[in-house]
Length: 182
Image (cartoon, rainbow, N blue to C red; front, side, top):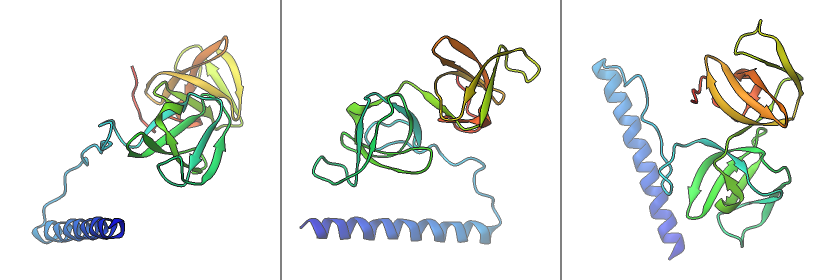
């Protein structure tokens, strides 16, 4: 029975993709341009945007091969507050990826909506204002995890312990390019 359901779901998915492909061909033949911006994809369980960033609530979390505790553990994440990208949802499970693309299915109770970022640059300068000529408030090493504040104009406000300031958005993982946060 399970194989029949999976086969039916796969057939529907393939049919949907073929329908989308033929619609694109029809659009091209008519000479009409597709909409400039694709509609925002939402998660089927939470109705939140997909993909999205979250952080790890626990100090240790298992990333499993599938969305249940009976599936094999592929990864063990051991950094509390580490940013992760949610790319899938199924019941109480979220498919997550780290900055290197490693991941799997994690139970939602191990994740938090509080946003963090990880420093990608070799050394990141935190400025007192969102401008490259602003005085430097602190320096962060690659791999440091920081709390994410507001983002605008290619700059994000971050906080690590007692240090806080503005960092170039391109030097951070855990925030989309051009993302604006207030």
